[in-house]
Length: 207
Image 1 (cartoon, rainbow, N blue to C red):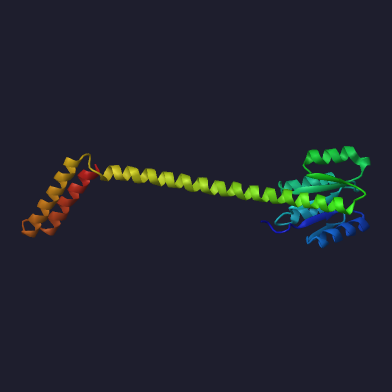
Image 2 (cartoon, rainbow, N blue to C red; image 1 turned 90 degrees about the vertical axis):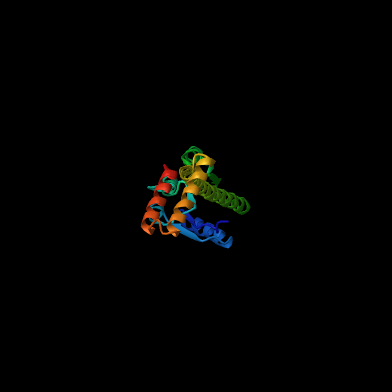
């Protein structure tokens, strides 16, 4: 379970910005406030790790909410963005959704409606976080499976090389090895001769 995410709040209206920030803080969130679209895009570029949630006003001078959405998703494709808009800006609000905003909340803001919207926004962020964790976990497991299969293949090849072709050959090789050991124990073979002959037998097994 991810901790409550850090929120970037973007609004040029000081009263509205402070009111929303107070609501969010009362719900236990850490809030970074940007006073303009320009400040927001700069903050998004510099923030490491990136913001998980962004709440931005739509209509602002110079860089507007659409610019903020582009920047938020550029630096974190999984960022969940809430856009604050009036009914008069319906076409821009629709464009915000096309760009990748998760939801649009209309102004004036109703407290109960806004809190519910924040809850859905956080749930969306949590789902994205869990999805990414599972994707990374699956990739790790697939990598381990590939490694195990490769290791198994090498071990099977080695076993085939070490194992004699049939039981009769195995028996003959063991008998020859015993004979060599007897000859060494009787002094008929030196240790060096024994090791050389033994190595020749093993080489024949591996061929």
